[in-house]
Length: 247
Image 1: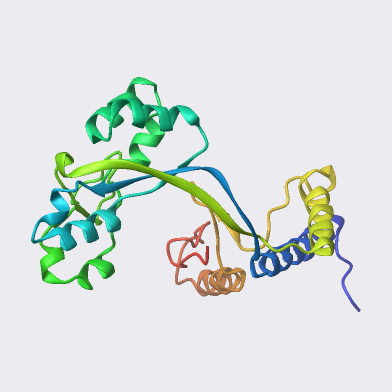
Image 2: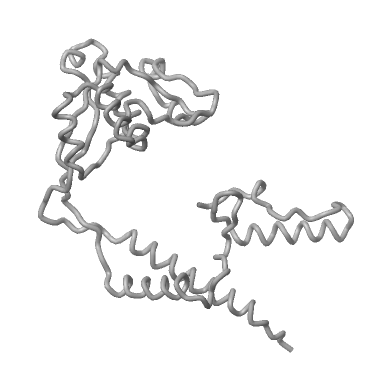
C-alpha cells in the first residue's frame, strides 16, 4: 500500500520539479549562439596603457603583460567620466583622486591599475621574467584577497585611455523559452503558493550556494546510521564543510 504524502511534501516536490525545469531552460538560453548585428556604440571603455616613452623600454613587453593581466576595464555610459579624463589629462593619480572626490569608491577599487590578483595555478604558469614582479598577499585586506598574487607598477608609467564600446552581437532569443521562463518565475517567486520553499541542493552558510542534493542525502543517511550504532552522539545540522559546492 502506497503511503499518501502530506500537502507540504507535495508542495515541495512540485517546487523542485518546476525549479529544475527553470534551470534547464536557463541553461539552454545561455547556450544559444549570439547573433551578429549592425555595429553601434554604447558608451565607452576606460582602460590603462603604458606611456609612450615606457613602451620604448627594453622590458616594455613584460610591463604590458603585467598591466593587462592585473588591470580591469570599466564600461561606462556616463559622459562625465569621459569629460573628466579629457579635462584632467591621462594621469592616473589625478583621475583616481577625482573619483574619490565624487564618492565613486566602487569604481576606484574595480578600475584602478594592478587591482586584480591571480591564483597560484596561474602564477606557476608565468615565466620567471614576469613572475618576479608578483608577490603573495599573506593577509586579507579590503581590496586584496589572502592567498592571491598581486603585482604593482609605478603610476607614472601608466596612463588612462578611453575607447568606444562597440556592440557587434546580441544574445540569441527563443520566444517560446522566454515565455515559459517568465511563467515559471511568476509561479515560483511571485506566487505566495510556494513561499518558504528552497530549491533542492541549496544551503546557506552565510552565503547561498548550490550543493549536490544526492551527496547531502547520502551524508545524512551515513550520519543517521552512525548515530543508531552509537558511533556518534549527535548528528550535525549542516554537512557543508564536508561537501564542496557545485556553484
